[in-house]
Image (cartoon, rainbow, N blue to C red; front, side, top):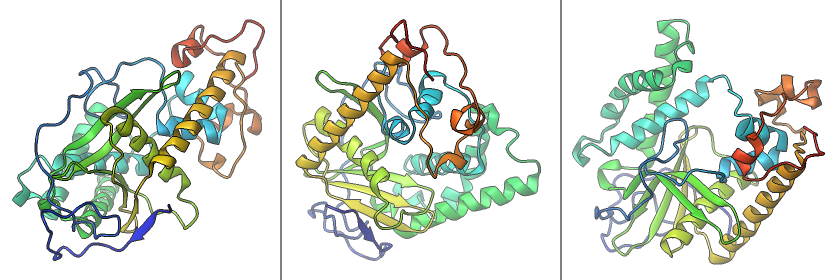
Length: 336
């Protein structure tokens, strides 16, 4: 079933409290969500992505949708990020995405009546100060107050777009920045962070992910859909129910993509995840992390270390592969 592009919602559309989650319905034409206590989650020492994520995990080798996509894109990139843990320079776009996510998460801490666009924009300077304190590498991102203010204004535009797509005064998310994790039988530990989980009074789940870029062109939704199906698979395995709706909110161009997953799709995603992990384990055993040239190479932060561009990967630290993957390389292999 393809993703469905949806026009911005009409905030005036009334909601039926008994309405189900409908894949074709406007965004805010979904019943107000109940505010019962969240399900028991993992313990409090969870790894967080870029400082984000509530809940906790068991730690140890595992696979997130982002890292799975890294390996499918380029095994050497996966190695640089997961095993070498090489730093990557901050970018204005990535920092803006983190900032906007933080504001949209904390927006729902306020009473419904106070969740206005002006209130959300007013949160940006303080949230940016908190992010800079948590991530010192952001400190030198801008060289002047004028550049900082222009960048904050661009973040404010994205926040403003959000309010054309949803009416947060009519939503009560069950979870925000939810850390999810499950271990497949005989397979990898899967983990990720769900931006928002909505649960209707009847128990139907809607998984929501905010994207600060533009929506993909028709036919290029595969990566985003894989991420959302990955989350749906983890929720299905941990909660025993398939989410009714997967929803991507693109703030860059004000579009929403929705998808109603099926059991057959999630079984296929599980097979794909197992296959990716098997290939990762093979690369770890043979210590073979081959580069794969693609149209995404110009955006890679590690071109100077990539053999495709005349570089040489650094020597791996002793035990790094086993620590990251749970598999020790064989004694006679040494490929990048």
